[in-house]
Image (cartoon, rainbow, N blue to C red):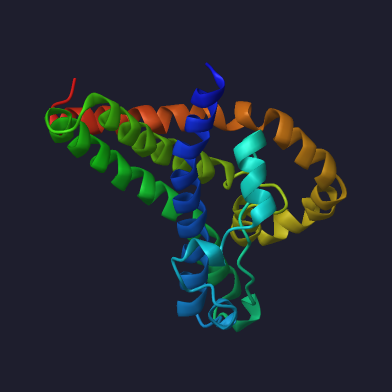
Length: 215
């Protein structure tokens, strides 16, 4: 792969990252707002404008090192009527938004491959196809990654909301070693999420191929 190919790969992945990060954080903000927490509304996070959700450093990190982050939505769980139940909904909203985007994009992929190949020049067709595939892959990866039960990720809050009493028994230990866990995720996170991500991605693509007859 030459220098220009690497630049093209980066450019083709940018829209997928913007979509994944934006919908993930917007989902957190929207669900929290509907459950009575207006913090995100006051901070201007109830928007699909990527500028409201993208952290510049986190964005560059994911482009360079394939590990990054968006600007987290701040919440005030004390505003919820049912603390654990409502906080669980907010925590699940982000990852589920990414899964839904992955499913929708897989449908778009099937439609695109089925009909656009006879219309567009092959060079244009391949570029757009890569962008669509990147959107599926990144959204599924973020869905899986955020379910990991480690500090800073949605899975951590989900575990707390589902098993509050058992969670508090290990919470201090998780926080104590969170930097070690963070570096482990940076270097080995790909291994943790690659298997479930590949299963979901392959399933989505196979279903799309079956529905739209692209074999």
